[in-house]
Amino acid sequence: MNVQKTCEQFRTYLDRIKALQNASSLLHWDAATGAPRKAVDDRSKTIGILAAEIFSLATSEDMHTYLTTLEPSVSELDPITAALVRECRKDYDKMTKIPADEYKAYSELCAKSMSVWEDAKEASDFSMFAPLLEKIVDYNRKFVQYRGHEGHPYNTLLDDYEPGITVEKLDAFFGVLREKIVPLVKKIAQSTKQIRTDFTSRSFSVEQQKAFSLYVLEKIGYDLDAGMLKESAHPFTLGFSPNDIRITTHYYPENFTSAIFSTVHEAGHAIYEQNVDQDLAGTLLSEGTSMGIHESQSRFYENILGRSLGFWKYFYPKLQELFSEQLKDVSIEQLHEAVNHSTPSLIRIEADELTYSLHVMVRYEIEKALLEGQIQVKDLPSIWNQKMEEYLGITPKNDKEGVLQDVHWSDGMFGYFPSYALGNAYGAQFVHSMKKELDLEKLVTEGQFEPIKTWLRENIHRHGKMLSPNEIIQKVTGEDLNPLYFTQYLEEKYTQLYGL
Image (tube, rainbow, N blue to C red):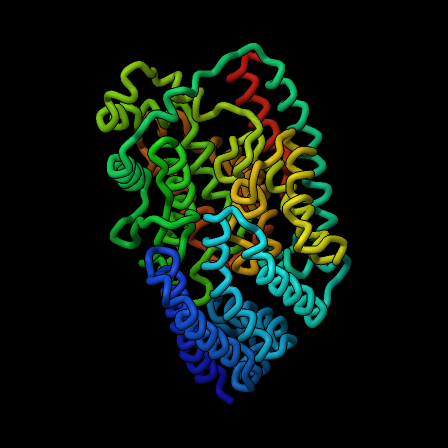
């Protein structure tokens, strides 16, 4: 068969898969941003049918033929087609091991469970969600067995989100974070420094919060002509192509910083995918190379930029303009200290930058144990509370602020959570290299975010999935993942903030 002709047919075939994925994503977006509640079952059925069709195309005899025809000639293919062959082979090998009817049923289950999770969270009643979560966990255990695993069974799921990462590597990684962060948390607890936070719980108009969020988005480089901002129960980013990357946030009248930082966090994700090379648009490569690299971008914008003094020197005048009464007695320095105030808290997405990774450790250990069968779903509320007490010294009063706080398990995203902690480390490592070329503090203080975005685009964003996570890290920093850049950043920041 003519290789060039096969390439063209292969790319056209993948266009069909991408179109179906976009249709399914649009239904998920609709479900999370205001679709009718009574339509849950019908919508779940539609999503299930689309998922089954995507599964069928990705595992078909046609796909097998394309792969076996093109792989022997991969060195002759253009780089994009060669990368598509690589990614499709990985998905094909993964998915052909899972029975199609089970995959369809699992997709329907996840589509339905998100709505059930929302109701359970609102009612703060884990028992409403537990039966569906049990099924989701059972499916994941079965899927791991179908697919096979090297070492810990959790490794198979980790590889879906962070290729190359294993339980062995994560245990060592979290060991470093625990060794460095826990003593710092204890020092802060003993510090006499009093940081004022009373003003953060004053009443802030949701409409004004929206106005400020949109102002910040535009200034930091999120293209609203290639995206949009909506509201959902749990903030998230959803991408269709570099020309359509959407984000959501959630507003709280008496916690105005929540929406600001969730918006900036999701903007980091979105800016990443908006700046993937247009040559990759419409392909399966037009997304982040891994969840960890993705989180490095969101956490960079949220924390390294968004919680810096320079950021607020630039944005505080606008915030004061919108909330003159609420902030009339608050200085820039007081606001900066307040948004960096560190104290153990119950909600991961509200956690401060220092203690955040401890929240991720709780979920990591629970997921490992669930996959091993060491713990059962019905026991999760008590196990969750025990681990929160062990790592953070606090215990949730109810399921809403405990085991039900995150949406990920309702969508079957086991293996995802470690990416949040990895992202912190990747981000700090990238910044170490960035500062060799840019005066980051000066740029942020002056509101010059374009040079920062350009550096990120050239070094990270434009590659999409063309490069692996480790290839990105090696290319940008000249070394493998090194968590010490992150722990040093935390030590310097919080030592200065608290006068330790």
